[in-house]
Length: 310
Image 1 (cartoon, rainbow, N blue to C red):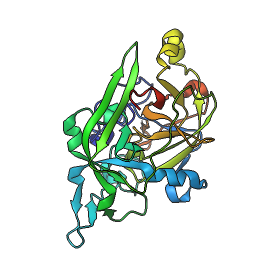
Image 2 (tube, helix red, strand yellow):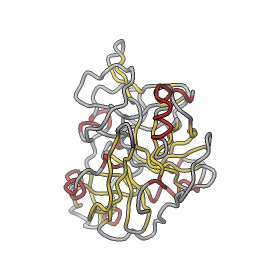
Image 3 (cartoon, rainbow, N blue to C red):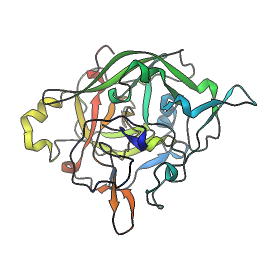
């Protein structure tokens, strides 16, 4: 799934089989995504469209509670583990983007009501996982310390499914936070119908557990080359998901995928192909790149209006 087994912290998930060289170290990037065409990831404060900068305020990062601690000098602040991506993944190529940024979490999520957050189902698979993780808002590139008011606990799992088989794809979790979130508007989302083919998309989340990024340049795609091998089944399964050529990585699981034209959430990022391949000549792992051809589009987005009970 879209973020699992990230940097030895993520969950084991069902794999999409792709022809990529396996990484020769303990961190697994299976079931995650890659770069289509140009790398379209932006820091939140550098993004051109203010609409999505505002919507980013309603997106949170899932962080293990063990990585957070109260600031001794100021109890209103929270300190966090500051290990950089290049330290967490020591064999990542030195010229990869964002290697000097902190890698803190393993999944993304977003508000759908003042006290409810939605993410991918493989990001929260048990009540224990609910209780042992926090949800952090406003974790961005310039964050040095986190406001305690921006950290929320998972009170309970309201609904969750994590199913990938020949008859259905369901990957979502709706959780109740420990208190209402004020000053951040729940994201509007599609209530019925299907998003049109070629609709431009924006995804907001935390690739590789990094500070929040806004990513555009993606569009709703048709069947990819794997799906075309079982066309009838794939069309049937797509009642719950669509695919898109989004530049997303492990850690983006649970990110909102928004319609660039309406600003509404179309779905939840749940699955994709391998992010990284090992370059034997360079002796390091580098981002996998594919063209923007629809046949190469492997990112799955769970249709939000197919999440029961919303």
